[in-house]
Figure: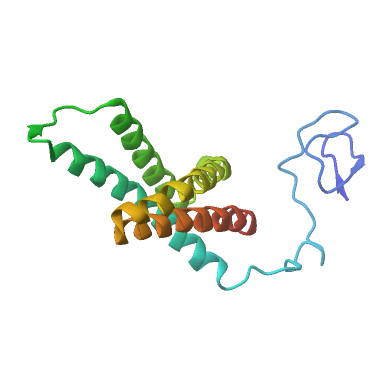
Length: 172
């Protein structure tokens, strides 16, 4: 218990204002008890932080790879005609790449607003990965090994995003 410096009434340790005289008591020193010195009951597992940083780095690299793919496709010639400018699909993919990299960097630097919105981002990645699986399976028939690589990438997106949702909860 603490005491209000103005009216001398006893107040709980967690109080920020006096309930009797409405004085701000947030600066009043709190007594240290055995309860405040206790260590948390559950410790974070040793693999949590390395996995968190690994997946955050994967998000950065994944976003950069998306941007590189768009830039390479813009410089390629299609049917002997040089492609100039970006179409709406390339613009959307470029934005997705930039956002993915920015979210990965925000996670690496533990920016709280990014950590708050990453669950939504991860659910979108899971949904897009699930939707991509039938397409990539079809692409394995047409493109062979390239289709298999794309299938593995879609599965990796699903797994990494699901794991990041878990890791955000564990590192809060």
